Length: 207
Image 1: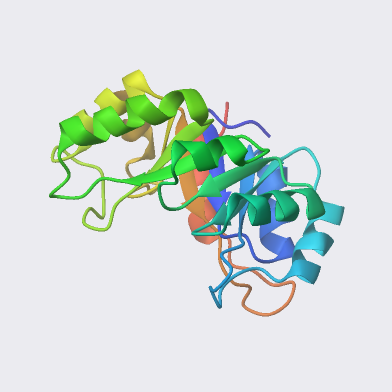
Image 2 (image 1 turned 120 degrees about the vertical axis):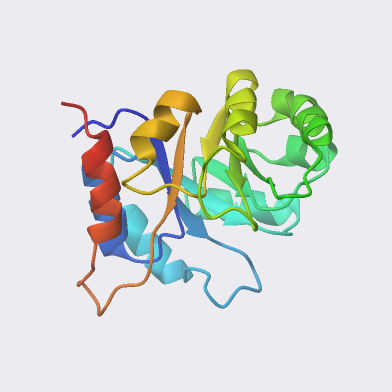
């Protein structure tokens, strides 16, 4: 199956999600490896997942781990990319031995010129940016023009406000590199409700 845009699914913590996403044509699946997060995926679970999935890139999601710790875990779990959920110093990013996806936020008080300047500074050192928001629940006239400006200048994944009703409009007006979605917990081992992801994938499936 092919999708009309690049897709990252973050927060994968079970084999059901990983295999489903790989089968649906997702480009990158992400694993929470934040050291102090109770929701982080367990090492044995991650090794099991890595042994089963193929044809999809993998990214480890980190918060404040040192570059040397990130490199050790990237090597141990054979990760393809690293996602930094807070801005790191450029010197630190250069120490990381995998391409970096940098998470950035846009909120109601974001100064657009400052965010543009920051992204211009980081662009030579990162693979791409994934944009989240604490304030905006959807993509509409309050933020779509700025997101389109960012998408025209940088390699950007939109990681918030995406649903089956607006996905086609977002792809047409914002024109991002791709979208970011989130996996979740199994109802019980091996049983998973994929309705929300499936609805979006159905909308962007190549005809």
